[in-house]
Amino acid sequence: MSRRRRRGRWLVAALALVVAAALGAASWLLLVYPKERASGSGEAFVVEVPRGANARRVAGLLEERGVVESARVFGFYLRVIGVDQELRAGPVLLSGDLAPSEVARRLSRRSDRVPVRVTVPEGYTRFDIAARLEALGVCEAGPFLEATAEPPEGVDAPSAEGFLFPDTYDFRKGDRAARVAERMVTNGARRREALFAEHAERVAELEAELGWGTAEILTLASIVEKEAAVADERPRIAGVFLNRIRSATFLPQRTGGCPRGPDGPRERCGCLQADPTVSYGCLAEPERAPSCAAFDGRITRAMLEDPANRYSTYRHGGLPPGPIANPGLAAIEAVLTPDAHDYLYFVARGGGRHAFSAELEDHNAAVDRYILGEGDEEGDGDEGEGDATELDTTQPGATEHDGPDAP
Image 1 (cartoon, rainbow, N blue to C red):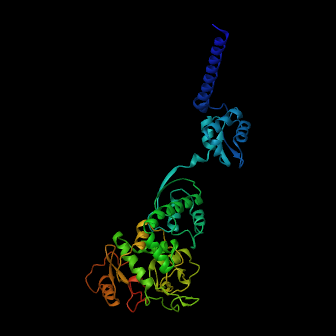
Image 2 (image 1 turned 180 degrees about the vertical axis):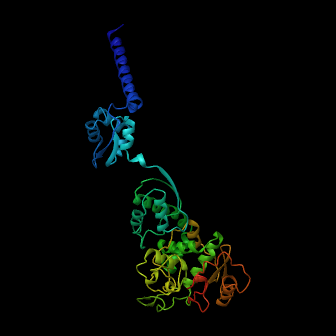
Image 3 (image 1 turned 135 degrees about the horizontal axis):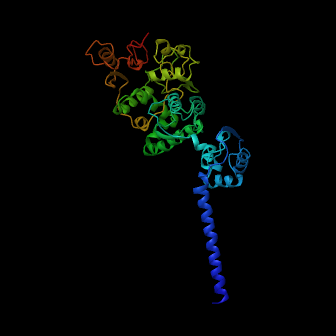
């Protein structure tokens, strides 16, 4: 056998030994080492992990405290399993008899981040979402409200209300509130993009006629979402509100009519007269309106007559400052594809449905029948709504709130 051939065999054998040793070391590091308990006592103590510390520094600290026997091996183990990228800062409860895998788990930010599935229904406000997230342990309500107090970048709106898309999300306990809000906003932008592309012509028409952009479309959609209890009525209710917006007579009372622009009174500021806008003003900005001081979810005559509530669509024409809830795709599409009709009024008639009217006289008759009980008694189940939008008994734009919620 030639010397060259013998040398080749020796090289192959050496390489095989190196590979076998590497595989053996890797197997030990990943299969054996993680289960080897340290020889210290089982007494628990707290180790303070410095913010920004890397795996080598943390491993050295743990070796000093007797948690691990070799800082070099444990540090390498943290890097191999990826925990070095997610080391938590602050106090960590440990002891001297823990296996390396358990120590690594406690050092990881993932240790207490249990998956949580959260469903956000259509029509939830950011306040509703905050309460649900806190109840499920995802994040506290306060930080979420702070994270959504400002609108998404490039949006002219009072807050992120309306842009937090209602959907089912998989979060984790202890998630950052800002991250949770960002996911909802991003999801909404993505979902709306396809819908707006499908109805691009209608979006352009609303911009040309009313000067509306995404924020305004979402604002009306949020009102439709809060008013419509039955899905197939959304386009019809959207049509009612658009008719009111365009109306020359359905104007806010006691505020001097439409706000003035540089060339005179601004057109198309018809009064929407939607109760949910009044409620939202008291929820989002209670300090602005004196009438909101005792707000408990019920709308009073004082609230309807209070011009200090800038969300009130009884005292201010056109749309409120921003969305009053977070609408789903169906409500948004209802605004983009409303039913064409001449209705200006609607009143609850039971079962979540409404009676629609084009003339005030017909509307008053419907109010008598379904709300005041002077006709067939079919309004049971919805009498508690008392929507002032549906109880106008004088003239278009007036707000005689004679329903069950009136004081």
